[in-house]
Length: 262
Image (cartoon, helix red, strand yellow):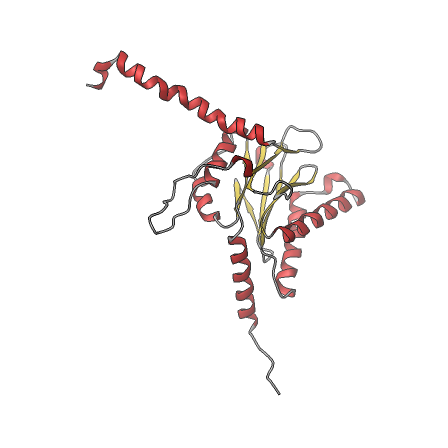
């Protein structure tokens, strides 16, 4: 008679955590950050039909990284939970905090009770009437929940992207300025340690693979709005258009006042 396989609970939890982290690390990153007019979502997503960013309720948005079928299940469950709560009580009773608590319980139960954990990270964001009332909740595969003050980064390059955003303050920035900062951070190459790339270097963004949406503070009722690729391209080009004249004027200024160099 063969002996049944035994593993301690601590070992099982470690193995599940390692499995989930490896799965998330394979996924492309997503950023959620606040700006003067609301909350901005930016994600690298090569698919034209599968969304990593979506609306959950009137003023609540959702972003995720990891395995699509798993966070899609969470997204649909969150919409149903919000709709039932709003129908049974009042639409104002549906909040980002209550929805984040719902997701934390769901992910925690899956992590401890099922054989395989979800390989996902998600963010629940709620835009408030003023910037200090904006709420960003970062949830991990095991149901842990963290309220972040300014931005949330998920996916395989989270550490590199967080480092690029950490010194930035977007509280008073416009949508275009915040979008350019987010895309720059999203396309920052990680440190490889082999000399092929260094921290701070950015690759050219693939504009057709950017999924961008916002929760607009001043938008009545449903605050969520997707930004089309053409508008994203235009906003990213605004920064280049503003810097080109300044760089073009330098030779003229130098020739007009040659003695200033001495």
